[in-house]
Length: 230
Image (cartoon, rainbow, N blue to C red; front, side, top):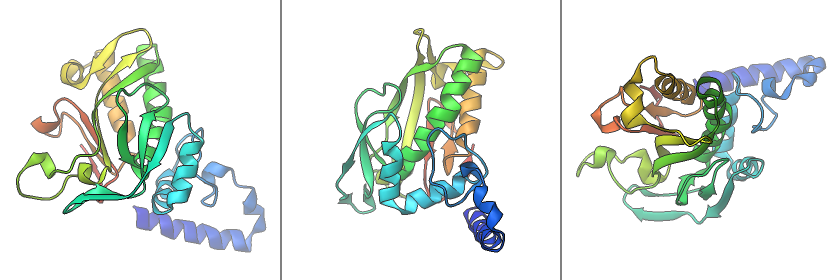
């Protein structure tokens, strides 16, 4: 998908060079316009996220336009296949998140867009109140997939993943994956399924309770090398 988007961007560049009038494209349809926090995601968003991922300064600049409270952390290697580069310490997103956590800037960019354009709108529509706090299981952890002694490193090992366990709304209601995912037509269940599906357009890997028992109580959201929406 990234390859296709890149090819399309090049084709569009050629069109712009030939037809100057296309310079008036709205930013959300302009591959040269920077990723914008308040701009609703569109077909170019994955391409713009890939550009931000490859440009640390651009990623930091994007986060600076959000309500998030972050600070860059030094690159660090903690073991074979473990550590992080271009990461930030997240003290607060647009909502409360509890203890600060370290997350790669590219994953933070995706999380910011998901929170702004998926999580909060769906909470307002389906539950009638905004989200006040995200409950989570953290991000960085030097471990293999599923914590096995042998095998591939998890995306958590490079701070490219974030595990969401639930939400607390402004009115005090609490929604958890463990309790509410299987709620069927209940508003809480519909909300969880909507925000899960919405994450798939902004992250590379999105895993939830329907994937396997290991994810029965949380969403795994990552900016890894593989596309998965389960």
